[in-house]
Length: 260
Image 1 (cartoon, one colour):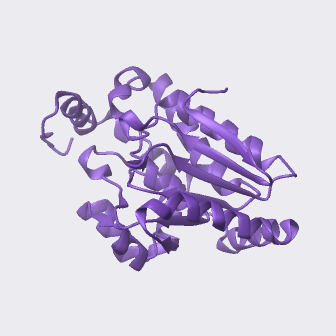
Image 2: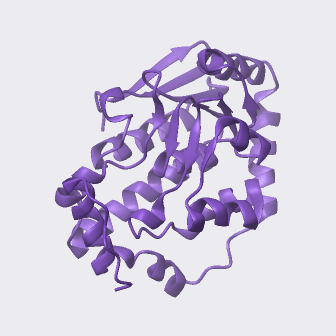
């Protein structure tokens, strides 16, 4: 499924994927999540590639996450929720399963699902104006276990709790110090450094790079999560608080949570 807002370019052995919706801080609606997954899966199957760069268009954002305004048409029924959960999960996991190393160029806002995409990349380049956070608590959204795991592996329990429960949004410097960013450069150099990193990676032996990415993931092992636990993580769309938060976002007001 091609999409005009998910653009794929080639630079020799490097694929450059651009989320091209700067007017909405590169927020993702469902067709964009689907197109991104298909693009990454296509890159993974390409033996000529050596590295993938994921970036956002413009100077303001890498990706601000899901397009919450689209929830009213994309979610709300069991059938829609099943599709949405499957497709956004596929999009996230396409990065983890990609055979080639993935570099995320995290200039500006890297929030919510955008931060999720970034943490599933293998390398993250940001600048001082990078803002990285996961405001799930503001919408009563439950992150899936396999989306939480890379955050926990990267930064540990304490910082993950800061992001998810306290709702901290880290500056680029803070994100680098806490391990969320692999590299910190000047804002105007983020895209160039991500591409330069990809070129350095592409000069290495591709079979070795692919093996080491797969081996490090296999050493982590499968998550010890039951289907009942997975189902619990998918239950939030049926809560009153989620529906209230979605309405409040559209109405540009603060939600009133009641714990139901």
